[in-house]
Amino acid sequence: MAFTNEQLERYSRHILLKEVGAKGQRRLCNGKVLILGAGGLGAPAALYLAAAGVGTIGIADADVVDLSNLQRQIIHSTPDIGHPKVQSAKETMQSINPEVNVVTYHTFVTADNVMDIIADYDFIIDGTDNFPAKFLINDACVLAGKAFSHAGILRFGGQLLTYVPGEGPCYRCVFKEPPPPEAVPTCRQAGVIGAMGGVIGSLQAMEAVKFLLGKGDLLTSALLTYDALKMEFRKIKVPHRASCAVCGDHPTIDKPFDYDQAVCDLDARH
Amino acid sequence: MNITVAGIRKQVPADTTIADLIVSEGVETPEYVTVSVNDDFAEQSAFATTALREGDSVEFLYFMGGGKLDIRF
Picture 1 (cartoon, chains in turn blue, cyan):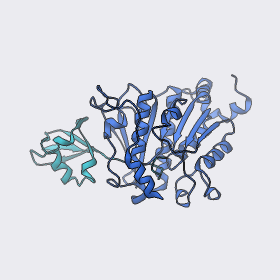
Picture 2 (cartoon, chains in turn cyan, red):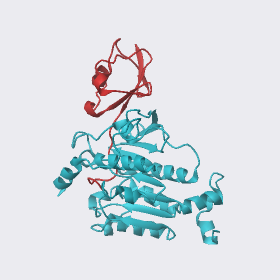
Picture 3 (cartoon, helix red, strand yellow):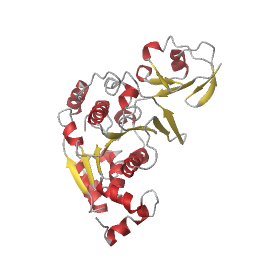
Picture 4 (cartoon, chains in turn cyan, red):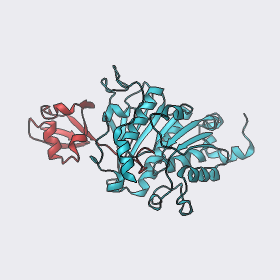
């Protein structure tokens, strides 16, 4: 497929890069990335991936836009309040780049549907904030052999880890299992600085782009931490855990499952 | 003895254990922190009995949420 003049102009700053070129841009245009959560992390990731011309971008979120989201979820605007986040996200992405095919999943992602949803994608971005979801995504991606980007943000901090099958640890290698509800601080209780989603969500988009291009080193054996108050990035080496329940030598998890706490918290939310 | 904690060199008493360090460093939610020593994970059950050694490099890895406030998503 040859690029049109408009495409050559739109993607010119990519095509100029020796690591990208026309060939790399074609890879991006043929790429499929899934973003789970159209929130603080998913918003910037979705904007950059749409702008980059990633051909198919899936975005999953069951929620509607709330006024308290707008301090950081820059894909949504004030008139979107009350509208499904996936719809608002899709409109913004297609306004930036009408060429991109945006697939929306206006649903909770659970053990019952996660394997079907991730099946079509090359790379998955975890933009969720709760631990049951993070472990569900991790397990599903490990079992399906999919690369994904984990990220978390809280207060003035952020963290990032990329999983690629067969290369380095998964999220469960590092953290084993979710903490009990309310055991560790969450954004809802403790807050998060708005631009943190921009920093860390953009890094997730960067990992997705590098993965699609097949260029550079992915963050596969280290947890990157960012402390905005100290203005410090650190790469902490993390090993694969031989006893990991999903990717270890004798795995005990052979299909994705939902942690019960998700259900109670879901009930408590209403 | 000298050890490195989260990239910063520190002096700690000899025979300091991981559990001691968790207290002296004021680690938030110590029950849910992942600890690595010299780039290998330390098991929670051994925190109180694992004495650190001169030159060890210790990291604390914390649970961190994300950009989305919902349970599931």
